[in-house]
Amino acid sequence: MPTQFLVTRQSTSINWSGEVDSNRTRATIAKAQAEAPQSSLALTFPYSECKKAPSAYRLEQFVSSKANNTYCFAIRVDRPANCSDACCSSKLIVKKLVVNVKPECDVPGVLLAATLNGKPTSILPTFDKGREAGVTLLRLTHLDLSLDAANGAEICITLNTNRAKKGCINLEQLCVPPPNEIRPGTQCSAVTTIVAEAMASAAAMFGDNITSDFTLMSCSGGNITFCGTLVHTSNPTIPPSAFNTEAAALLSKLLSAALIPHGCPPYLYNHIIHAELTANLPGIGLTRLAEATETCTELMYAMHMGALRFPNSSRCDARQGSAPFAAGYLYSSRPGLGRRSNRTTLYCFTFTSLSSVIDGARCGNATILQKVDFWANEELRRSFVGFGVRPSNSGSLVFRSPSWGPPGSNIVKATQLRWTLQQAAGAEICLELLNSVSLLDFCISPYTGACYLSIFDPSGACCPVYTAMEGFPAQ
Image (cartoon, rainbow, N blue to C red; front, side, top):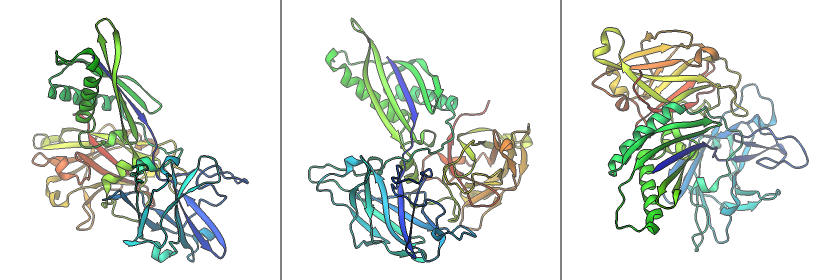
């Protein structure tokens, strides 16, 4: 019974704009959008002729999910240095929030709600048709926040359906994804190895056998295809007419047990998982019996963070792709260095450089990777021996003592790296821990089995956050 998985990259995010007034000058900014040409009709969100940069404020990267379909966004004021543009003025007033949403969410009878810093807003959010065909916007007006009041302010929107249960109740259903988001490519062979092992374990769990291991079929353009074969012991009393139902149930169980047992793992972040199950039926031949799809979006990934925000700095851009450096989605392990090899373990993270960054990134021209911070339990610092670092032009690890952040920060730093783009592409940082402590105990993470790290350029203005999970032991 061949089973095929197709994992495709997708971009799902919140498009938003905040309108400001300053001496009759109006400006709007949009998250992760390319600069639209000035014309009589703007064709990209927020569908108005306005400046998108520079800006004195932005929405924080991470979304906080609360009860009753409520999603919260924090405003961060960050006026660019030496900016004389009206959009950087200290007299700006944040007037409203606009979200680019899918038209199918605007159905009669849906009543939305919103709060500002925990208090109901004076005006309820509403859906409006845009000037352009097929455009629908969610608007929350009359915020009227000075920059001082806006900094750190929390806007929460509660989604609802109408009495007929029509409408959108989560951000995945609600938001139109922005174009041109940049993500580093998935490590195809490593992901396939994980999938093969996970599928074998899941099949055994349900009494099935893998007769042909899952292997990589193709990996291009953000799409990864891998296929394998299993023998499923079907109930002999089930008639052929019920094969599809049983196949659908089996596929759903395998998908949940193998790939997303605890929600979407970081290495599938921003991907769609499409699985098909086919069988060679007597008298019929090869037939597709079932298919299933799971979506792992940026919003789901961000909500793993919840109210927890890493790094603890609020003044740097933590978006992936905000600087031309990235971390791999998987880490490997091997024995410790030298004489410590029998009592320590190295957990190694890989890095790369990006050929392009997200639109408007302040650190798009950065050429130096200065340091990497890891989110770690400082109570276990005595079990942490140190870092082994290796730029791509070096053949061996160099040991470095760790640098810890202030008490309570739970941050350990690999500092003074000063890697060029060329050195970062293929570089490696290994954390050396005593064998009495596992990396999963050492790392602080809202997602089970993951470690969070943040990459800094020398200015400290950008600190893209990446997540890595255990891959496989290094050979």
